[in-house]
Amino acid sequence: MVENKIDDFWKNKRVCVTGGAGFLGKMVQKTLREHGANEIYVPMIEDYDLVKGEDIDRLYDTAKPDVVIHLAAHVGGIGANRLKPAEFFYDNLMMGVQLMHKAWQWGIGKFVAIGTVCAYPKFTPVPFKEDDIWNGYPEETNAPYGLAKKMLLVQAQAYRQQYGYNSIFLLPVNLYGPGDNFDPRSSHVIPALIRKCIEAQDAGQREIVVWGDGSPTREFLYVEDAARGIVMAAEKYNGSEPVNLGSGYEISIKDLAEMIARLTGFEGKLVWDTTQPNGQPRRGLDTSRALKYFGFKAQVTFEEGLRNTIAWYRQNRSK
Image (cartoon, rainbow, N blue to C red; front, side, top):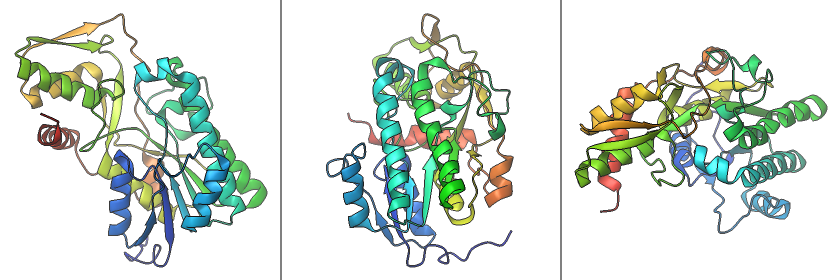
């Protein structure tokens, strides 16, 4: 595969990154600049409600992008998904569908839609292959969110078929890394466990409570790797097939919790609260399509990524 020169694709291109001020978005901005993009427009939530069509028109009129990378999403962990399933469905569906439709109407050259691993069926064989995405209903706790995002795949394929519109759909696995969301009301498993372990140490507590029974498996992708994969796909991939972005490393929640305890120095006991849901039983991706189609392979090892994330949290948490 021929590598693009650093500035070939992005030279003189204007890029709009929805969600660009968020955890992944900041890293995508950084990666875009490293690849030669110098006109990046990030719509701020105070200025644009991307659920409203008129705000999207105003955004595209202002930004005049050549490429849209749609990262913005209403997201959260199992607890948040159970509390607000209707919001998660409506907001994510209306944002994505209107952003892509209006990108086509405005003649924007390319639309990069970011899906979610939650779109896969609950009992997908591991490793998840992209062709399995329609073979069943998603895990119930996050199905409304997962299905709303999956509609962008249907839309991307339909618009390519009818209009010849260049829109692509990527399926990143769970992300983590420095700058993650550590709010206990909405955080995902890695930042939640890091915070619990460090706060327990500070308070001299001898145990922490972890949801579920520890048996489910998950795969995680370091945020820098995810950003690199998205930018590489934007540069090099122009097809209708969905593409996984992952690390290819599957770990049980039990092993994950024990690893985070070890890396944070927490020596107390892990107590498993089996009244709380496990979520999807297994999650691990087949990442061969991303390597084949645009040369992406994760580079940061899981332990290295966890160490970086823990160090960032220690430095940045409010005292």
